[in-house]
Amino acid sequence: MSESYRNIFYVPPKGASFPINWLAISEDQVATPKYNWNGLKRKHAGSILWQVTLEGRGYIDIVSRKGIELGPGSSFLTYIPSDHRYYFQSGDRPWRFIYAMIQGPSTEIFFRSSCKKNTYVLSGGAIEPSLKKMQALLEMYQDREPSPWQNVADTMEILLPLLQQAQTIDLIGQEASQASSAKETSLMETIYKNPSLPVDKQGWAENQGLSRYQLYRRVKAQTGMSPKELRNRHRLSEAIRYLKRQNVSIADAATLAGFSSQNYFTRFFRKHTGFSPTEWKKHFAPSDS
Image (cartoon, rainbow, N blue to C red; front, side, top):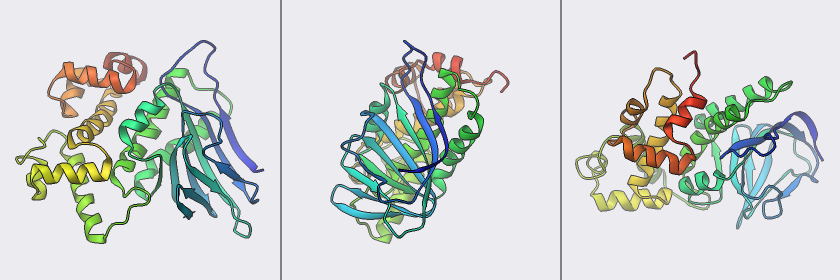
């Protein structure tokens, strides 16, 4: 079906259970219409797939939208199973791509708490950190396997920026004017650059010239979450980034990420990652940082 370039498959230690990890990372090239995957019939139910076009092009159908082109720099992020189909069309240049398959008992929790729909098309500079991470892993683990805990950390480093972008772009099937899109982008930038600001009129709403109700409606329509839910998801991403630094305490990470209470931060962190901040820091903070 495909001409394989590089593949890494990961099998967790027998009897071990980790909340989320990458199962496979692969760089492939296809040039046959036999390459045709139906998202409702895939194996690995409960997984997340992210696939990025490097050269050539492929296509994806999402629910009723057909033939969405996936050229160089375009990618799709999807939950399996869901109503999508991605494929190669006869007559096109070979489609070269890299992908990661992510699994684990917390996979659905991460995806559903961040994403309004099942499938997103992502592109632009926001996907670059995750792409570079995947390419680095292909080089790093050709001849050896990562430790289970390192796999979890690598997975989070790939996935969190993608979930954040999925929250801020127009979802598949939505149409927006350039002016509307610019307003939404400005709003999301305000939220992400000022995670400690309050939601009310003294914070994000005032910055955007909106009432609190208008802010709620706009954020809810774009992300499927309330402003507070979106803020806390972003704060979690920031906290994880700080916890990877050996010289940053858990209390400092909570404060720097915008959480006002360490107790609330600990409860929120465990709910969304399956770990306490202490456990996360113990396993994922580099000893030489």
